Length: 99
Image (cartoon, rainbow, N blue to C red):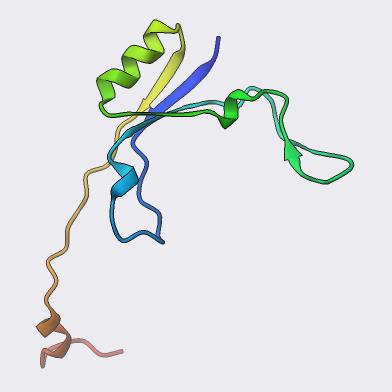
């Protein structure tokens, strides 16, 4: 039985927008460890399921897919974003702490 993990990916540090972080992602847990190829040195695994990533618009669709195919899955809930109120004028405040 394949193990899967369902989560909403976070944006990388190189992104300014959240384009690919709105969909839910289903990834399979690795069933075998990665070993270096003796000839080329590339890391490879015996199972090909660790290369599969499925994207779903909603969490319900991802869970329904996992249940329909009989996968054991782990659901990782996303953390809520904390927005910090910023103002350009705060950079020039008189009482700003200088280090």
